Image (cartoon, rainbow, N blue to C red; front, side, top):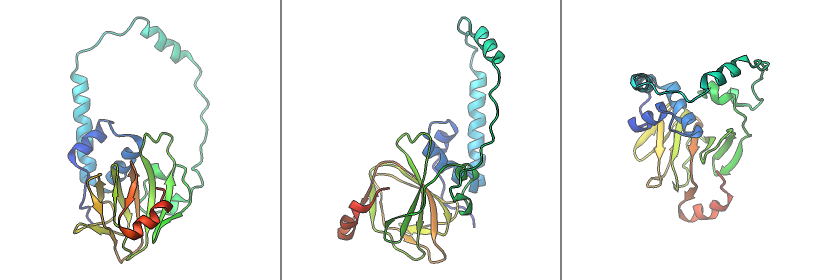
Amino acid sequence: MTVQHHPSESLLEAFAAGALDQGQHIAVATHLVHCTDCRAWARSLEHVGGAVLAALPPAAMSGGSFNRIEARLAEPAPLAQSVAPPPNGLADIPGLPSFVRRLPAGGWAWVAPCLYLRRVLLPETEGTRVFLLKSKAGARLLPHAHTGLEMTCVLTGSFSHDGRRYGPGDFDLGDPGVDHEIAIGPESDCISLVAMQGELKLKGLLGRLVQPLIAL
């Protein structure tokens, strides 16, 4: 199936420039694994950035820089260690890139009706949390809003909101001005990788009753 929804050009520029934090970088990179067009565009931006750096006039090095480099080169190399992937159970999730599979993760936990979460543990959070969300096929999630940015990349299944359908590889960006009322597709459970800042705010009476139980 063709990817239909993509990050904005400004977001891809920030990705190529290394201006995103680790969690947001992972969300955009997950989309790039599935989207050849965005991947090619990001590479083009990286080449442009490299050309700009190459065209800059040379700058004088500080005194003693060359000697410090020689001293570092003379230091013994650290012994290479074989690091096995953590037994986190992520290997069985379709569409999840290898760079995410290698990260430690928790187990599936109930967070709301028909909604389950697995946290992906990052060395540095920088205010952005990364997790997997699994929603039951055919479910309708509680209406909600966000107090910060939310980046979502669909791995399996699909969801719809505001008249748009998001399938595997599609990227969705939510901000504090967006209210979601999400319907999960009937074909299968929907699993997405999410990078979220801020908090989730549920709407309606049921949402207010469930809100104390939600910890995304």
